[in-house]
Length: 234
Image (cartoon, rainbow, N blue to C red; front, side, top):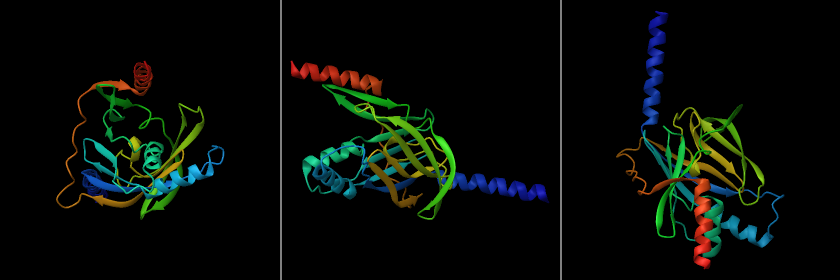
């Protein structure tokens, strides 16, 4: 009898995981997080924060991959909005490969199109026992350290993921955790899920493949960009 009950529970658990892991759409909002040790003009911070706080994003996923992009919004200031998308890393359309634990996006440098691979967004997490509720889901805390390339300032990236939606995806290319990331704090920006649609009727909009290009690392991308700047300056 106990064996039968255990078997039923195991089958139910795997059926539940399969149900949740098919496909979904997550709408995130972003919140500007002021970091006092980063010195910037107050007016500049205010304008960037206003743009970031109005921005929303969509994560679509299936069993094979995920796709994350910023949603259209009417900017208060076009120049500041462009800076804000860079700060929020929503100037790229992010793909995630759960088999290789890679985050990827296309990048055009001069006349060539590349696929940039990041191996640090879905690996290297430290898992914690701390929990909290987000939109009714029990979420667990995970952190990783990150050194900003241009400033060499060290940040702690903080993610809150829920095993109740057991897919390894999240905003801005971050993931690789045993559950969907519902909240992510990185540098000046906090992403928070505001709408969760699991297995929507009619399915999700098909995820297009990355455009073909040579696969390069983040370091290679920086090197190519430096060379490109020298070419355009000459």
